[in-house]
Image (cartoon, rainbow, N blue to C red; front, side, top):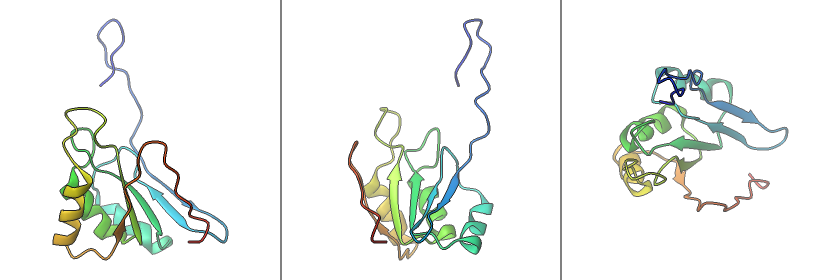
Length: 124
């Protein structure tokens, strides 16, 4: 948690995700800095999700096991892991997420992006 110079905590707002529904294009669910929560199951009731950007490094957000459970609630076509390997204490890896997704019988495909890499979603 961030702190002022006087040691008091700084309120950073409520973590949230967002669904981007592009006209004549794919629907993207960005989980933001959230953890697994039951209302994720409501997301696909409004919009079938093509791409889910799921935080999965652990510590501040979901770890691989909870991220895999989140993908099962949302049921996207593609999962893009994020918020991992940026600090030593973020122990979750895309391989761990993929293993958990397989264990749960997920039908989603995973795409791991390198920093700065672009993904063309225009044909989705």
